[in-house]
Length: 329
Image 1 (tube, rainbow, N blue to C red):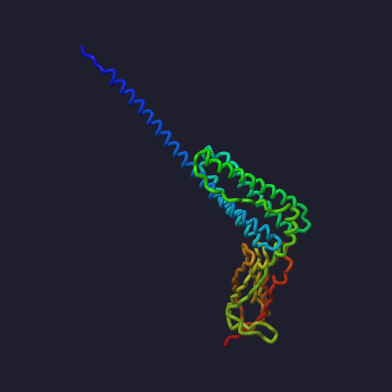
Image 2 (image 1 turned 135 degrees about the vertical axis):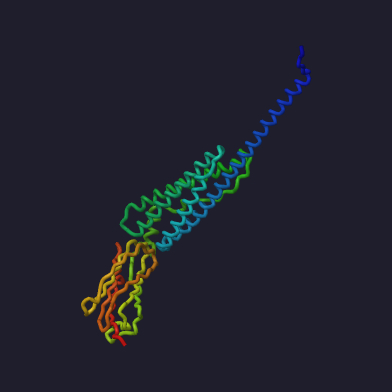
């Protein structure tokens, strides 16, 4: 009979080694987990700082625009507001995509509230300011602006609270917290003062003005007759280039353009129609129309741009040009 015998001292040594190994594993796991959490928190703090930088820049732009509200043009106001809202909206992805560590949950909720409140306030503000500038009798503009100011103030307070909680993590979580910039959107006075500034602005009010700003012929006119009719070189095919412009300060959609050519000879005229999909403020576009013509005929060309809703100056929407086509040779 045989026995497997392990001396007591050797057994005790094995137990101690196993215990020591277990402690080492636990320590490694804890250290790794701690470092991972630190990296996660540091990454979140950096994302929050990037978002805050955009918010701060946007608040400065909005503040400057607010100060100059009585002197800005409508195009500058709408363009700047659109840029602010676009930048703020795009930066929101930094908050949406961030992996939020437990230590930053409260601050993250406040940053999200600030983001949503600022966007809501800016949208209300833009619409109400334009409404006040367009219609002096609008009684709702001041109330809407008041709601916008409340949304902006809520955003400011939420952001301030978030920064306080993020800054406290430096001591609580032993992590380097970056400096967060100031972002204040509620810089305007009460709604009545904003309405007064909007109505005092010369260029903020809506102005709609479509126009025919240039007309060209191919072949080009050689001159004019004594009665002012253009003289077109001999041709059987006349190309007319009409430049249509938006002289107003608001974009216009679906602009109808009609070109009518009549003459003192039956069958040598016609009518053509085009629709311009959209014209931005100060934008122009050129349209080409082709007509068959005959020599020694007196023609009248009429180019008509349909007026848009609210347009008051219709004199430049219609152009009438008489011309004659030379005979061959």
